[in-house]
Each structure stands twice: as C-alpha cells, then as structure tokens.
Length: 336
Image (cartoon, rainbow, N blue to C red; front, side):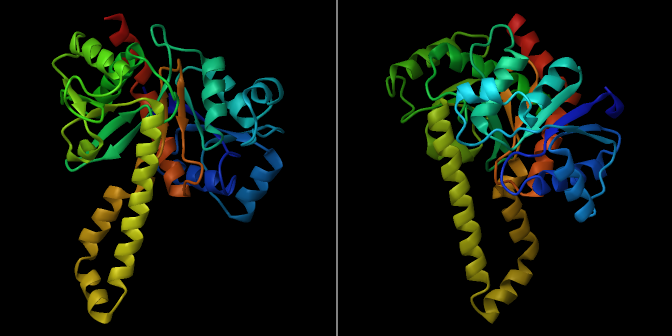
C-alpha cells in the first residue's frame, strides 16, 4: 500500500492544550510523510487561526468543521445522543466509510471506546476491545494490554487479547516468535484469582501454547522475558500510570543530581549521549499512541496531556497500523 492511498482522520480538539498540541504534532508527522492525506476534525475557525498564528506548515490536509465537543464529564448517554457533530464522532464515521484510513484522538477515553465500538463495530470473534501499547524493557519493548478499556474481563477475553497481541507483534517484528505472559501476583499455577487460572489453562491449550510462558509478576515486566503482557484493564491501567509517574520521578531527580554542582554538571556533559539515550528509553512520549485492538477499524488513543512530539508518535502509529493492515492480520488469526 502506498502513502497516497492512506488517509488519517485526526481529532484536533481532544486533550489538554488543544488544538495547538494536536496541530503541531500533525505538522511534525506531515513533514516526514507529505503524501499521507490528513483529515482534521474540529472547530474550523479555531483550527485555521491556530495554524495561522503559529505559522504551522501542514501538507495535504483538509479541515472538517465540527461544532460540538465531547466533555470529560459526559456520560455514555450524552456521548451517544448529543455529540454526533463532535470531532470524535465525525472522525470515526469517516473511517467507517473509507478504506485504508484510521483515527487518532487525545480526547475522552471512554467516548473514544464507546463510539469506536458503536460506529466501527467489533471484529468477528472478539467480545471486547483492549487498549494496547508498547512499554520499554531491558531488551527493547513489550506490548501490554489491556491498559484500561475493561475493568472486568474473563478468561475468554484474555485469550482473545493474546491472539490480537500476537497479530500486532507480527507487524512490529515478523521474524521473532513472541513470548506471552499473564500478569499475576505469583508464577505458581494455583496463584491469583479464578479467572486468571482459567485464562492460563485456555492459553496453554490454544495454538499459542508454545508462545505462552505462564504467569509473570509485575516486577519482571521490564526484564524483557515476555514480548506480550496480558492483564485486565484495571490492573493494566494502574501499572501504566505507576510506570509513567516513576519515569517522571527518575528523570526529574537525575536532572537535580547533574545540576547540583560544577563537577556534576561536568559529568553530565561527559555522559550527555548516554543520558539522552536513557531518557529516550523511559520517556512516555516515545511510546504514545495506544490502539484499540478488536475494533473493526483503526482507532488510536493519544495521552490527553501528550506533547506535540508525543502526539506525532500517535499519528505515526496509526499510519503503521493502516500500512501493515493490522486488522486483517487479527481477522486471519481468528479464522485459523
């Protein structure tokens, strides 16, 4: 598939510091991918003024005016009944009608999940979507899901997550046979809640049995033993937010150490390259852009407080999912 066939629909109004954050991220992505068509959804006059006032240079784009916004306090009924002219609703509707397209938003997570499921539907054989993202480890990265779409899951859901994660990983690293782990409080087969033990048995008896390593404790996530890490959305979201907070803590404290004295500042100059590589390794911006696996279309969630660079990473992830036909791989694996 060529770049000219791909269109990315983008919610310009979602998240903090929007639309500038989103439009600047679009500019960063567009500078590297000038032939990708961009449909920008949001308040047209605000978007035009933001582009003009900040002298942004965006290639190959069209603005689709949307007069409503999904608010953080909106419940499911309000989202479904009163937000049909919002940037999220209209952007997803565009993806529904156009092949080789995908949607990116930094807006309300619940709204994105509800409307993605309503408008795009689910892939046959998948009961629930899972929020999936890359996380760093000592070797490179792992995929982790669910990161917040489902507070409660059952064993069948976790097996489906494993299948979808396996499909996703085949795009990222087709030469590697990924290892799969299931988050639990211990590695023994009799540890943890009943649904985890049932999921362990299901995955162990599926075609993924040779990929499945069993239970993994949270303190082993960054070791790089597992390429695909499974959990319910409640546990996954707590792990993700704890990791993000820890990353900020480490980064800020390292900065304090290396600015404390002249000797420390000199040391930071000597170690500048290594420190930059370390910062990039644990920087959440580099991993921004989680996909809703199981949705019958490409729907990508950016962090609400993402920087423009982080938002560009989310757009780039969407582009890769479209280019590599992620959903076809998931569908083919479910059929087999």
